[in-house]
Length: 169
Image 1 (spheres, one colour):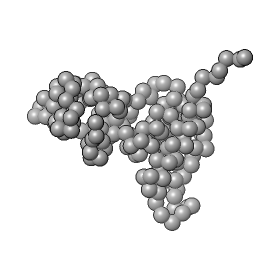
Image 2 (tube, one colour):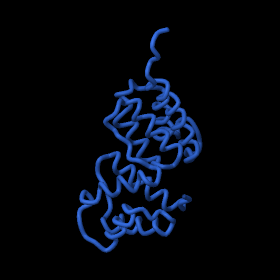
Image 3 (cartoon, rainbow, N blue to C red):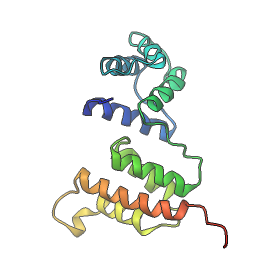
């Protein structure tokens, strides 16, 4: 399934909202996203059900289970922030790198929620500097590609730190 960049961005935004624990937007907007997904060939029963909300009024919490399922069906399952901190950091940074989570949502969660819980690792600190203090170290703002490369480095570090220790030989 090939989704447009705009549709992928909309799904990545919803994924970021779920990561932060609060869906932003309207039921109508979510319904129209589902309509666009159907147009792109994602015509699962869940997507069809969510599309039925395109002209509805209601609370986003009512349709959250549908949104979670649709994201999973599109290969962007919601990230569980309750797992071990390094496992969460790995999932977030991989999603940032792959563009299935917005850089803003992922970086915000890594910095505000995980940096201390992961022991202030240099990989996340470098991301903070690149985002918050880039003027001190360079003349131009970082590009999304540069931020995705940094996210990949965090994923590599997280993979090493969250891997179970092999049993002794």
